[in-house]
Amino acid sequence: MVTMTKSKSELALELGHAMADLKNQVRRRLQQRIRESGLNITFEMLEVLACLGKQDGINQ
Image (cartoon, rainbow, N blue to C red; front, side):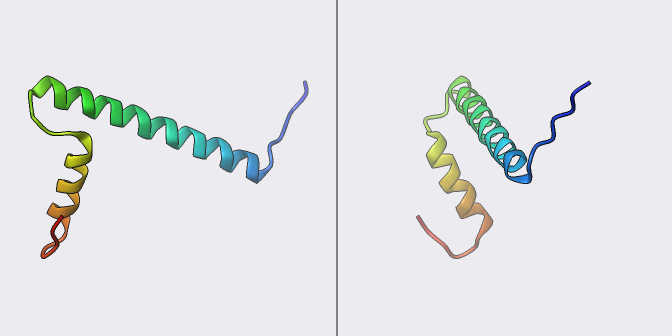
């Protein structure tokens, strides 16, 4: 049996790719849910609203 070990940089790169894939899947799903709900808002607008909701006293 051959065991291959990966370097920390290879593992970090794989993790980065996996996180990017997950982010894209979540974004697609949220965009789909926004469309299905009939809201007249884009994903980017939702991101801005989320930031505005987190911090008092800021504007667009």
